[in-house]
Length: 82
Length: 144
Image (tube, one colour):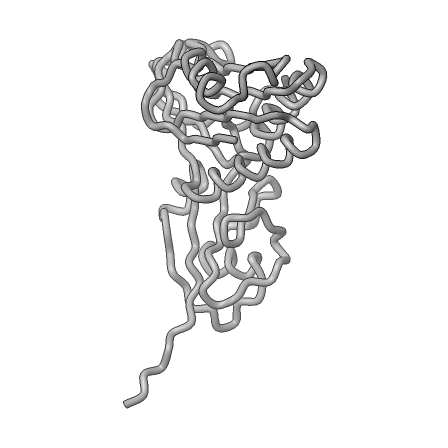
């Protein structure tokens, strides 16, 4: 018997953005998703905040960077450590 | 090189002392430049009771390791040590330690400053302050 593999992208949110979105993690189907910007539009109806930062597989990336099945895409506000 | 995220309070001066004793060859280091960041009980005109520091497990460590390795290569450091707290932090707790060790002072001082500025502007950490009036996210770090 054949099983159809569901292609997915893991999405994570941190800090104030997590509270705004209301999720820590989401899993979305990767069909129709080409870039990190597409991921944002798939999870939120809100416009993109210009200051928002993006990481793909735990490395900083631009919103227009390509994402693939199995990637982890994270969105977060400007960092305030130290 | 050592990079650590800590969930409990630490004494940066003991850490520097132990690191020098355990990891640096005696007689080879002429300069130790150390920065320690400590939590204040005030920010933007308000009293701050405590704060929670959040990070991105995996990315934060990787980011700090790359930053530290780059600084060691660029400035020909003998070694470097970075420790950063996460979790609930109280005023007067130390938050961050950045230490650079080299043969001469110039490299250690420059590298320590550069690593600290890189950490502040790019390492994935976020602060949420607890005030008498409620909680608020720190939106931006100060310029210097």
